[in-house]
Image 1 (spheres, helix red, strand yellow):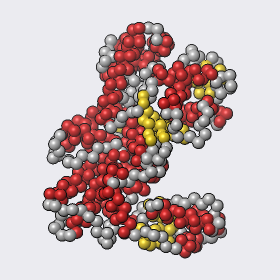
Image 2 (tube, rainbow, N blue to C red):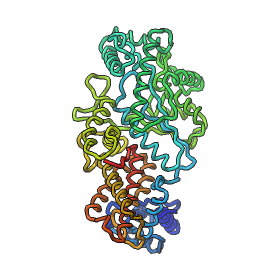
Image 3 (cartoon, rainbow, N blue to C red):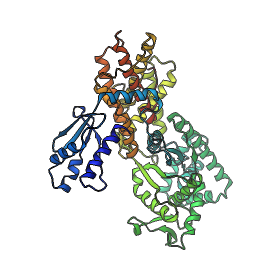
Image 4 (cartoon, rainbow, N blue to C red):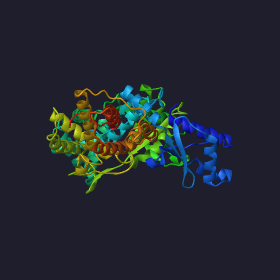
Length: 559
């Protein structure tokens, strides 16, 4: 049991003795280290129940708690907050365990035995990767890693759209433009041409709808060939981008596979009233569960996105029947949509009691010109943004001492891109600042990479002069040491709240504390204290490395 668990258990036991039934204890890291390491507001939460002033209840709780192994001081602050300071010896013990098992430093076993399906990226094929899919990939990959770092078994799933109106617009556009379906840019131009015609030309709209029907039926060899070549081109390019971003999927399910399965399931549940026929379409009336009605089969009998998502769920659970949780990572604008989908899934499928079905929302990435959409021309795609960051990063890499500039420039580009996406909350909009993203100073991915490379350089120099790093367990714990020790707490909270930005924010705080400490300390000073200071550098290095891994960001050793 770690110190957080010991404190939480002690507080719960005291509240239970005072008569609280099933007490809920919140224990947070202090915002200001001068107030200790942990703080709880339980006295404020339960004061009314005991008809006591919060501070008086806090005094009673502290008195009943007595001493706690590993806690050096307990204070009461303000209206009744209880602040607890961890004994220095516990810091050194904890940090040494991180050096003993470096790859697992900061990890935990809270999700051991839990099987999680996580679906993310899931682009519309037949056009370049959209910014929204890029954002979903970055957030989904980081959440996957948070789950894995908590000992869960994670199944990464990609669900590309390879059929439907989007593809029909692209196929129609190829026929009109004469574009090459083996060229990803030509696919983007064809889609925009088709979409514009669909919205503004009734005759073209009728033609595209007819193409859509034929593609579902698979009755036209020419159309099938264009669709297959275009989707193959999109998939190949997507694979390249995912490799750059550090994502590898365990399972890929296509809409063309899910559609027929979903249609069959929907039709089989009309008789039992889960779905109803309304004006020729088959719908799920979500009003019965406080939601809204959605169409699952249109009047032509074709499966909509809704029916495909039912089929997709069936195919996922056939592959992973023992899952405990299932999440879909996609745009915040689909929150209400997924509430209906999840309600329909729970109505159709048995055996889901106790299983978590969730939608993890992602915000829009915007520039100064506002929200971007691949439906219109002259927009920045996810591919454009990644390529732009790579080109700009080459300038930064050229100034480094790294051995392979091409590799480093790509690593810097990935760090710049991912950190800007992950630094805010998962469902919040992202204002992408190119210069800030690439900066080696302040709130950026390259700044974290640079700080990690600096720690590696110090360790390398220490090894050259023969210093064997070792903590002095009698030393006072500096702010840097105390912040470093918070890593495991941050990981738990980020995983529980599905919020990678908590790790991103923490790493910036850690890097700033380290660089401030480094500016004031002469580490390789030739004294006995050097071994202790090198050990601190080493655990900061490992914390940065593991934290960057959680964000899906490479940690180069030279910059």
